Every structure is written in structure tokens, then in C-alpha cells.
Image 1 (cartoon, rainbow, N blue to C red):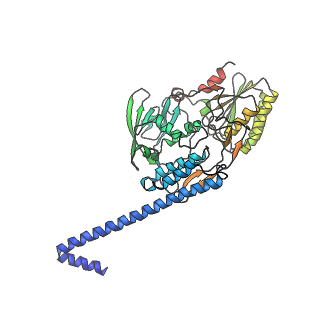
Image 2: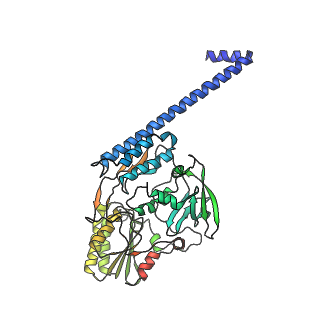
Image 3: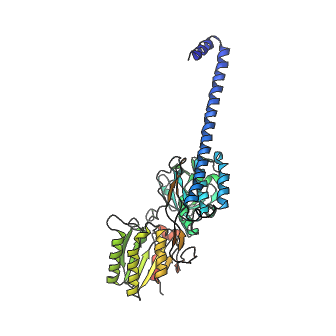
Length: 436
């Protein structure tokens, strides 16, 4: 303090000395600041490197396959390469790169999320969906609600088709329909676009779109903190202004299980989550549903699992028993199971058992998992970044020896953007109008 006081007093008397003193202080300040930044960057590189090592350790000690076999060479080589690039990549891109490492575990339940507890992530406040005729905006926050219904051709100058094709090589998956399910959410995240040349921390991003009226437009969308990201959302009813009421399959997706009668002695059962609900356990519902089937004896039982991404498969037995008993006692009745890209995990086990033990026919899209798959939510947290994910530690074999990548529908029906935005359901329409 005395030295600084002396410098100050001398500087008042000798301007030349004051100038030299100011330069020295600026130099010292910059040197200290650069040293602090360098120390911070070194700590960051060390932290991310430790997370990479932790991820490899957890895979080796917990994954169903790799706790018994050597880690894939692509995984270990990719991890070593990533350590050399931490300083070049943003935290958001590092989360993406960790997901690329998780891809080599080869299943749909082993992943790293694009959000973390200790580092920030940003995404677009718009929601996409992949229809049979391309990617569209299906929902958005203000001031982007006018984009609902627009077809998305490219993002940051990169065709959406290329962005999704590239995901087939790094997004965790059981099959390509897992990627179709995940892609719309992954497309929202800022870190995805750094490998395509977008500067880290960019404030906004350009979208090339086609309006419902057929006009080509360019629009910049500002990124926001991804604080409200809670996994892959279920498909919502059309949010386009003036759309008709929601179709049956989207009208009550928050209810885990429910059924209703349709004309011509058909019973429609929607199964949205393999979990109990507040008013009824799945076990109690399974018994009640089985009794209803025996009493009504519908000519056609339609089971819709398009919105079911899994849950607790130990709850399934009473429901499956009721369906199997119905078929046994009503051999002339039919069972139609409607599946889609959101049919995953415990829901996959459910449809695999129906495929194995009943004469059910399938309609809609293929499921996003396999009849037999490595899959279990075994959650992990990496210490430095707080990156969250899962390393699957169980194998589910519903149909011994079955090597199919998915259960293909007997009646394949896809959803177009036109049908969706008009709140139409081409799958249920096909099922109820078809003639055997």
C-alpha cells in the first residue's frame, strides 16, 4: 500500500514517470489476467479429461457387454482423441462428443444427455418432428409461433436430411427408428452445429423454411437456456391455428392407460406408459381390463402403444394375461397392435410378448427397439461437468433367437405432415376401414 501511494505521489510530480507506471500496471494486470485464464483453461481441460476417464471406467464396470469384453477400439481411440481437443471445444460440444462415445456401446439405453448440472446448454425454443414428407415445426415459444406448420429445409445452411443421416452414426440407438424418434429434440441444441462450423456461443441460428402456403423464407432463431428440457416429448396434437379437435390417439396421452368402445364391436385400448397412475395400479387395471374383454367380447381389440416409451416391465404380467385369455376364449376376434418410433424399452417387451404369444397383427411404424435388446435405465453422473446419462446393464430376451432389428408392421402406415396438422389419424383409419 505504501509503495502504491509513493507511485501515486511521484506520478503527480513527474508525468513521464506516471506514463511508465501506467504501462507497467496495465502489463501486470494483463499478465495476471492471462495467467488466471490459462489456469482456468487448464483446470477445464483436466476436468473434462477426468470425465472422459470416468465414463470409460463406468462403461467397463457396468455395461452388460463391456464389463466382460474389451471396450470397442473406436471408443478408446475416440476418447483419447477427444482429450486432445477439449481446449478447442465448448462445453456444449463436449456433451455432444460424449454422446458420440456412448454410441459405441451399441444400444438405445446407453447415452449422455445434451444437458448437464455444472455446465450450461442452449437450444432453440421450437419443436420439430420428422414426418413421411420431411421435418416440420410442430410447436414454438413466442415470438416463433408463426413458424408452426413450416417445413424445415436446412439449419445453419445444412440440409436437415444430412443432419439426421449423420446422427445415424453417433446417436445412441437400437435401430434407425430410435434416431427418428430422438432427432427432432437433438436438432434443437446449439452444440450440434459446432462441427458444421457454427462459432461456439452463437446467439442465434438461421433456418430455411417453407410456409404452409408454399413460400420459402429465412428466419433467425435465438437460442435460450435449455432449463426446461425433460427428455424426448410425446407427440402433441396439432398446434396449427384452426386445426380440428385432437384425434383419439393424441387426445389423452398423459393418461398411462385407458380404453373406449368404438363402432362395430371394436375396443380401443391406449397404453401410454408402463407405470402405475395415481388412481389405479397397472396390476389392478390389467385385471379390470381382462374382465372387460371377457364381458364385451369385442370383434376387434386395437392396442395403441405409439406413445409408450417404456417404464417398469415387471408390472406387465396381469395386463398380458388378460389379453392372452381374451384371445384364447375368443379365437374369432382379432388383435391389432399399433406401434411407432416412440414404442421403446418396456413397451418393446410388451409388444414382443404379444408377438410371441398371440396372433396379433401390427400396424403403423416399426418400433424403435428390438425384440431382444440390451436396455435398462442405469443412471450415471460425471463429476466435473455434471453430465447425465445411462449405461445399460441388463439384457432382455423376449423371443429367444430373434435377431430382428424391430417388429415390422403387417400394415405399414406412415404419418404425413398434412394429416398431422389436420389432426387426422391415418393408422387408426386404416385399421378400422381395412378389409381382410
